[in-house]
Image 1 (cartoon, one colour):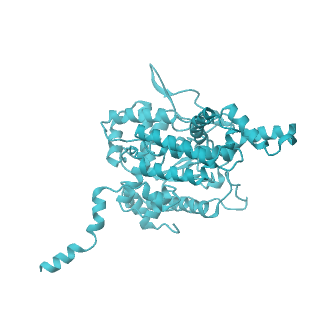
Image 2: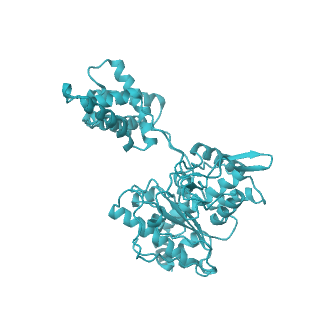
Image 3: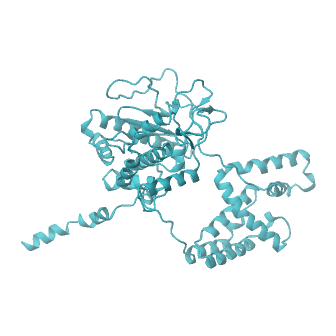
Length: 470
């Protein structure tokens, strides 16, 4: 998106349910915020910037200006992503430790030394062991654990066959037969091709980490994968999109002066995820630091240091507008920060003020944030875990009487779909959702029935009928 006009800003704000002209400067502020986010996203996608937060701007460069209506806040941080130091861009998600069996590491190291034979001295053996341990760091912990769960059955199957040599000497033909056995078991269990697909990817990854050519590239393996895709019909993952009426229903739960803190936190997360097009992983990265969660008279800017669509780990500022009504995501965030007694400004550079999504502990006085309120940058406070969030979400939905299949991913799909149905330009909600391709935007867009009918309804046949009937 090369430009974001004033009319685009009004269209975007109307999707959020607010009249852009009812508050002076609101459309202009949204125009500046979204244009900056889209420009940054485009630079990252086209230029391929290096990993990690970029270096600070030269001292002689003027600080970016962000006009805001009304009195200036007491603390006005610089929202340019280049000003965010690495110490603030803390990884908030619960850490996942890669699970790799020691025998797998030994076998991986031995596979590296096979070509050297007797010439492998002590230093080379030490380096091979080091390589075996660090090679897995090229995978995300969650991916590493998923592949480990698929590799272990293959290793047991290979050992039961008593095949010669190392497991890394297994031929493509043998791997194809193993994948075929998985295809057969998938048919019996009436599941989709995921079991075959994941096993093939895991075997390929483990061979690559041992610096061996993957046997899954063999034509026989390709044939089995194709058969799995054609013959296995799994159960479709069922979830519904979140709609504005759902957010309104949830906010009724917290209408009292002091709602349950965990419920308020969940409803706030839902509203923020819906308007920011966030996955849970994005919401889990939100820090309450006043330089990373910047609240103004017209909205708030949320800094996401890393996400699935941010391969270079440059981070994104996501603008969210303040709107009228109890479902305003900015108002809900302010209320949560107040009732939760979060600390937003650290006393020292080494202090970590923690994430927005936190565990809640209960006592006679009510709910409060569990554990220490703050931590240290070297040992940061991690966000609420995904299973814990899903448990809270299901309880809150049930309390609100929402029986549709709402999951942690429904907010991102619902926000994007609602924007599309309300006529927000495709390039605008693509930039707001930080998507790299138009195909992914379509994947996350579920138009309502009336919007789908409007396509064929707008083709002019009604006018032709009117002309013929005269």
